[in-house]
Figure 1 (cartoon, rainbow, N blue to C red):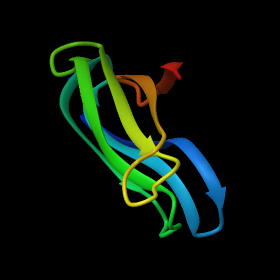
Figure 2: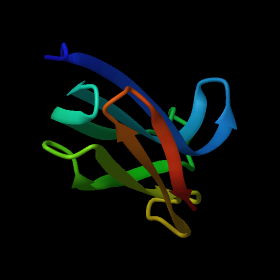
Figure 3: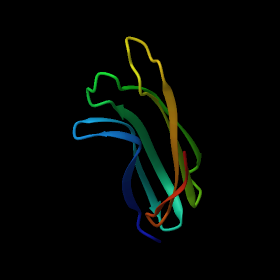
Figure 4: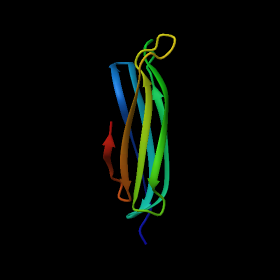
Length: 113
């Protein structure tokens, strides 16, 4: 019987700015598997707007496919960003990235905006 191994990863999307004044959405993933088959998954997303007065992170959402009991786990994170905050958002954009994780610990980018 194969031993269970756990893996962690993460990615950023929609990055603008420099130093501490950045705007982006961050995704964390953790999954465990016995070689081919995935046995547990966890994911979360959050946004960083770095304190720049005209940037605002407006939220993030995630969708998943496959995962526990499968040989692949797809995670897509969508972030909503405001690039022109003037007391209200005058200009928004949506960014997304999708990765596929497998039972061997690999994470491969499968799409992004």
